[in-house]
Length: 297
Image 1 (cartoon, rainbow, N blue to C red):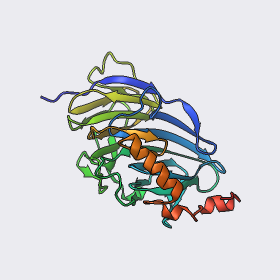
Image 2 (image 1 turned 180 degrees about the horizontal axis):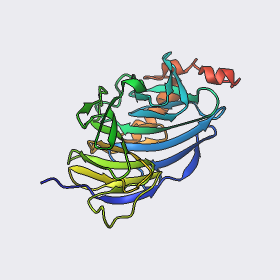
Image 3 (image 1 turned 90 degrees about the vertical axis):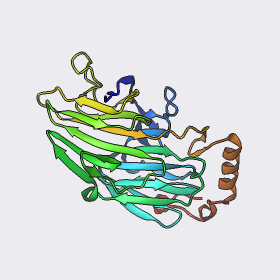
């Protein structure tokens, strides 16, 4: 028998400032929910030039950037540079170390989401890498009033080409008025939904539960399927369903560094300050965005 997942906790992600003038709605990684194994952070961000996320380091996890509007230019100390446009995905493995910047590309407001996925101890020090998928190449399918874009994993017969070192499912559902979703989720994985637009009812109590609106994170309990309904007569419902296999290891975090022990964090800070063990190229690197702004080293 299938067991529907129920909503066990609900958070409204409120705006806060992050980076250099950017505004984010953080739902995972805030004081009420520091960690939801294997997920470290979920930010819904809004940024307009000259604000952004200037040069900063990472170690020990992956970042998944999914653009909703506008575009962001990414560049790092390895010489990798590109623009993530609306509908595009960048799945970056920071691994042993990366220093990069993420700044809005052009005028107007750029909006998107960034998810931090933890890595197991065996993967924390791998070489950095990228998987980048343009919007037109993201697997997508529609049926019975439901459209899904498959960022990672599979749904409704569509499968993403993204390889996830930490097994992860990342789905973007749009549900037409009066339509419903029924999506299998591995019973051993942690899962949550995040509402982007409209209102939806999540869990099995479609008659008694109140609808949940935009910017809400819904932690899902045990089960092997998510059920969601759009009971509106006029407005579509858009939400993310994200799930991952728990790592089950200790987490030590200092800002953009995520390891297993405090000793490893101390070593990481030392490596970054000495430009060693993965951070060698940071010594003489500054992003083009920072050069253009006249920022001195």
